[in-house]
Length: 79
Image 1 (cartoon, one colour):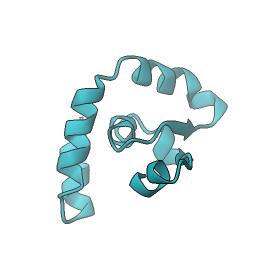
Image 2: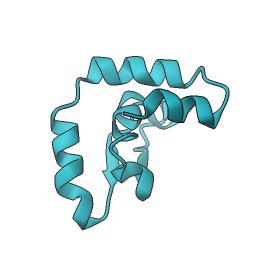
Image 3: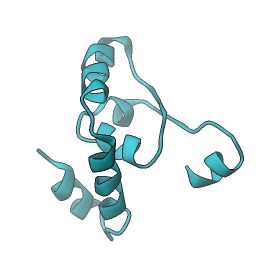
């Protein structure tokens, strides 16, 4: 994401992760500005994005990037 920003190249995420309500705050906190989701997920994704506190999302991302394992991330992000 940082390299994309530095080179003025948009970075996007598509697929299941982009549509997962558990990951949307993390992705936005990491600086991802473009999410591509299946049309059936658009209403839910739009609602989540509309209600996100970007400062909180950035705090989440800062914690997650310091985690060592996938399990830690899932445990931290799960509702």
